Structure formats: structure tokens, C-alpha cells
Length: 445
Image 1 (tube, rainbow, N blue to C red):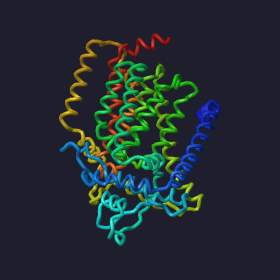
Image 2: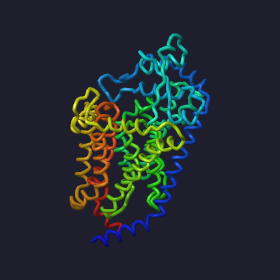
Image 3: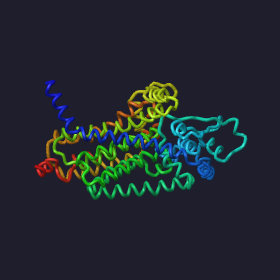
Image 4: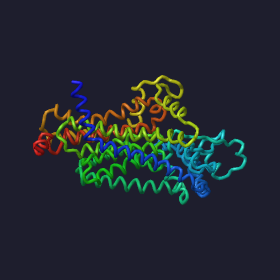
């Protein structure tokens, strides 16, 4: 048995060693490009950036740190606190050492003021605040969003950036609907629409904190659907590796699984593989590739900072990871996985979402009655495994990152958009298909 297993491993390595080598080079290129880009934008002058933030002072003064756009709906809360953090990091004048600045990611805050007010006071050169002002660092993330935000602030204020978000996000979403209808059929629009309802696309463009992973998810999905032969030579693996790395580079740990879940489910819908084992292993392969891109990119910053002689940030990073993985909340209350999951689900247990679910189930019943028949339940369950993996992945993620998911449930709940997407796509594709799985298999034989 041992000899057989080792033989299989050697054969798999021979088949895939070229792909592994190319993926390794791609990852190395991402790290180098990410480092050069973040250092490059720290060379930009911050005077104009600061002026454009100053022109937008009324935005945060009017809204506050956590405005609830629709009262009673926590999924409509904007995260102006973190947006203020991003803008404050973008306009920090720096120390004159762009390498250190790019690794340390400094900003100014004022004691006795919230972060939004501190940002406004610094941007507008409010007098009398100098003694209360101090410098903060946030080095454990790449803050790759600065590669886009800093150049934008040279020309636009916060309100204009929000409007650009609305236009660009809307265009990318329309293009996704168009391509999904063209390549996957009209049914695919339903699960994408349900995912969008959970994400709440009205709120996303108003908050930078929520926008970065949304952009990555939409762009990666559009690229996947635009690819002519994604399964040829496993081209899809490069997409998932780059997507995972980009998520780690741009995001401050919001709802990162959307960048994996959306393109993954679309790939499952495109797949015509007849062997369930191959389908399942491909889903595992996708998750691992995305995870490697995410993890290596994140760890890569700490390693590169050490290589470049910047003070070690390993202790800070691992300390924060320990907190986020802990089973205690901010008030030191004991947490269980079920408690954390229930709190996140509770964000969207509202009548509009309940109505949407009932409408979907009613439509599924009608379609099932129209298209009933087909292969055995066992075959459908086995074919459904990739979708089931993606359904459960956000649940496991939320429960493992218990502290983070509990404290920030107002946006971490969006991980469940992947569950909704995968579940509804599975039902429409495999359990209520236009053609039964048996017919599809027969056509391919």
C-alpha cells in the first residue's frame, strides 16, 4: 500500500511540477510587485491629498463613525472609522524613508477624539490639537489599497471617490450579469442576485472598507467568465492564486472569502466533468491555491520587512492573530461557535431577506415539478460536493475566527453571501437542472 501511495504521489508531481513552478514564480512576482508599488506610492507628495480630505470634512462630521443608513438594519452600517483610518494613513507626511513608511503604515490620531474627528482636525490644520496628537502604526497588513487611494486623492475628494465607486462597481456588476447570462445561462443570474442582496450593494460603494474585496471578487469573476478555456492547462489556478494574494494585499480582514467563493462557484457552474472525485478534488485544489496566495502574501510582508531591516513585526502580527482566533469577546465574554454564527446570521434575519428566501424556494418547487426526474439522489449528492464545500467554508471561517466574527459581525456576516451563492447555485444547477445530470453524462459519453 505504501509503495502504491508513493508511486501515485510521484506520478502526480511529474504531471504538475511545471504548473507548480509557474505558480511559484507568479507568487514571487506578486510579492515583488506589491513591495515596489507600496514603496512607490509613499514617494508621492501628500499635500494635495491632505487638501482633498480637508475639503470632505463635512462628510464624516455629518455621518459619524458608524452611520446606519437604514435604521434597524445592521448590514447598512458604514464603517467610517476604518475609512478614516485609511485616509489618515494615506495623507500621513511620512518620515522621508519610503521603505520604512511603506512597512510601518503610520497615521496621526488625537487623544480625546474619535478617528474621524482626528482625521478632520489634522487635514484642516485645526490649532490647539498639536499637544494631543500622536503617531500610530498599523504594520501587520500590506495596506495595498494605498496604491489606488493615494493617487486618487491627488485629484479627487472623498465624495468624488464614493461616486466613482458607485459607477465602477455598478459597471462591473452589470458586466458580470451579462457574461453569466451569455456563458452560463439565465438561471445563473438568480444565485448571483441573491448573493448581491446579502452583500447589500447600495452600502458597499460608500465605504472603502467594504469595497476592496468586492472589487477583487467582481474583477476575478469577470476575468474567469471572459477566459476562453479556463480548464486548459489549469489556467484557473493562476487566477485563484493571484486573487488570494490580492485579497491579502488590499484587505483589512473584512469578508475575504467572497473573492474565493464567487469565482469558485462560477467555475463549478462551467464545469462539465463527469467524475465526482475529480470535481471534489478540484474544489479542494482551488481553496488551497487561494489560501496559499492569501497566506504567503500576508506573511511575505513581515518577511520582506525583516529583510529590509525594518523592525520585526512578527510579534505584533501573531499577537493579533491569537486575539482574533480566541473564544472571548471584547468584554471577555466566553464565545461558542454557535453563538458567533447566530450573531452573524442575525444581521440578515429580516423580513425582506425572509421574503427573498421564500420566493426562491417557491420558484424552486415550481421548477422541480416542471423538470422532475433524473438520476439517483446519491449521484446528485456526490455531484454537489464542491458546492457543499463552499456552503460550509464561510460557516467554518466565522466560527474559527470567533473573536473577529463576533466583534465585527456587522460586516463579517457578508461571508455568508458565499453560502447563499453556492447553495442556490447548487439547487438550480444540480437538483433542478434544465437537463438531468444523467442526461448530461449520457451526452458526454
